[in-house]
Image (cartoon, rainbow, N blue to C red; front, side):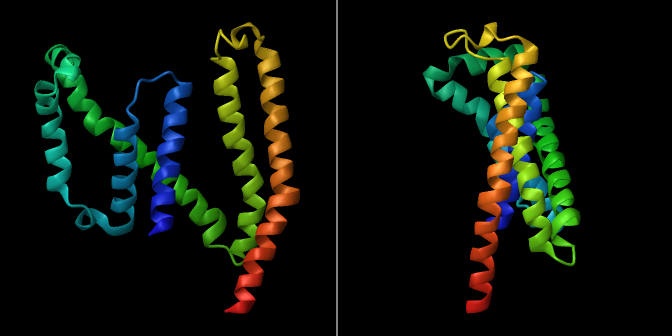
Length: 192
């Protein structure tokens, strides 16, 4: 059960990073729903999803905007851009689900189906940390806060900072975290 949620969160996070990098306005809620639906479709097929509650959530959103006065802008936006909201209810979860499926498929083939999955996972771990940290540092530094002065950092310096921070984190994961994980996992395996 935990692995399912982890894969859904990973797919959602990956899609949100891609959307943020491309400056696409997406909903985090839609993304996690899409990632969960995508993983459920992959794991259990169409029978693994109770579709009626999903449809009911989509139907209730305009009603909530009318009932709660602080959300008045939803009703005005939905009258002007109603089709965009309806499309986003399906497109955003669909794209998040696709990213979740791709991420799961990559991990499945690169780690889980290997003869030595622990070894492959520990090799891939620093690479995944490098990518995650690089994307996050770049996003924060490149589109950075004027208050912190990030907007004055040239693009080449942002790339150097991004690569340096991501490399340091990946090296720490490779030389410190991965060996400790291996020792802990193998220690538990011998206790069983």
